[in-house]
Length: 505
Image (cartoon, rainbow, N blue to C red; front, side, top):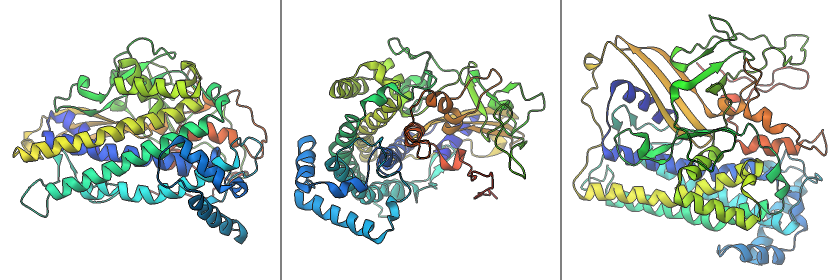
């Protein structure tokens, strides 16, 4: 996602328009990432906050089969199949080493699923591991590898299109893309969505918890043409204040974004109470946190490695919930249809959207609408190729001699976790300032100069915790945002001693 954001920032600065095929390939790559990432998040990063794996050993496989068949026609739903999964799980438990199921609060009183539902979730957890490695082959084909795709270029893509070449995207490759897209859709529609609704039905109280700041921002994404006009975005751009989804979202102006460092381990030359737009942004570390003998964090002072982004001086939530709310308020027909279906199925009102459960549901809704659209973009690419349109890159302004003396640009995308923006300033053919504001910075931000909490902090207020030594309820809300381990997590033990450090060369 940073790759496409960075090339868009430079394209915006230099006023470069990409060919339609490059637009489509970028959309296909991003859509595949959404579908894979959201499914992985649900099953492998978030499900164990709701699913008691060990409880699955108590399930009757026949009951699990009845449950699975009642909510979906997925073929792997027999009693024998679930008995086999249960035996695999039992082998894990009997060794005393739970492996991939370790480090969770098994038997916690906050778990609510019956054993049959827990066994079904375990089975689909394992299936999703195999499924995701197939779907992401779309990235291998169009991007060279996953993650960190290698085919993004300023002005287009480095993906050859040639119906007569075995080394390019041709009819055979299009058929592969279509097959993987169909696999993606089938699993999402027949496994992920039914599981999400089944799990959510046992946790309806979470429709009233974890609301957060109530303000939502989405840059929008998936352009439908190469004009660069925000109105062309398939997922719309906009801002919602105070949960107002009954009216169209406000138009978004990136120049209204500012970052504070009042409570962040950075400093600004003009003073740490000031706020800066990313084009004028500074990244000057100023660590003032715990030192030997390892005092606890003083949250009245600086306490985070994240800056505090604000839009019109207001904290904003970004991510699947923000995107689906902006799409809903913008009149996106399929999103509105699915939102109402989910609310009706769970028998909850629209206020349930602004919650931990709402975030979980929004991620599933988004996965389905994107999975449905993925094959549409593949068909459009195939149609272009069949017409003889093989253009993939616009190289008219590749040389710095054609650039203006000074230029500034911004690039945006919607990463699975939320709004991602890059800002670049170019002078004399060289980058003089580059800043990125990532989704987990928006959501995980500390308080700003006005002492306004960021979305994580606000969402945890009034969360009931049954066992403070095993705070699974805290994990449920924080994981519903899908925090980025690389962007925002630093690990220390209870005494303040650093456990691990990642150094960027």
